[in-house]
Length: 113
Length: 110
Image (cartoon, rainbow over all chains, first blue to last red; front, top):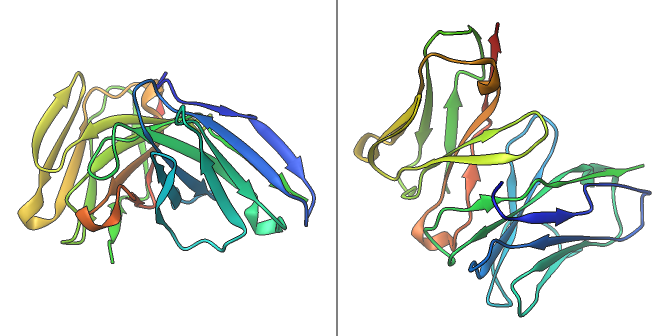
């Protein structure tokens, strides 16, 4: 157990819909990072939030957006879902942005039909 | 940009055997971590090891930053060690972004 929780665990959507995934960081951690892991691949960095501000972004289109709340929990929103968005979405929390060990949640498995 | 490469891609061991997994990384990496992903998808931190050697039970890791590689040693493997092992690296200019290798899939047979 890493102390990082995610919801929901599984989700099925259809192409064009919108989805919101949630993450609660480990106690005392103010930084949350989101990753997308396609089947058979390593996780890919989507973006990071530090103290409620986006603090770095990977190579993902603007329809991937996020939010961090004052309690440091976070949401990942994906609009206009595409079939290729089917993946395991992982969030990770850390004590601060930068060179810190990141602790991962169990992930949300998203299937887009 | 940051590059992380792992070998071998797949490994099958008999229970009790030892193994070594390798991670090569580009010279912009200064934040090397090893993870184990279990069959349910949970990524477990094994080591945060930008340099030097660390040990935790049957697992140990060594990173030689000057030569840009890291090794993960698994001794006396058990079936519960099965899963995918990832190394991941970040750099000081990337605000905590981790670049993951493609992983090594380990199967330990009883």
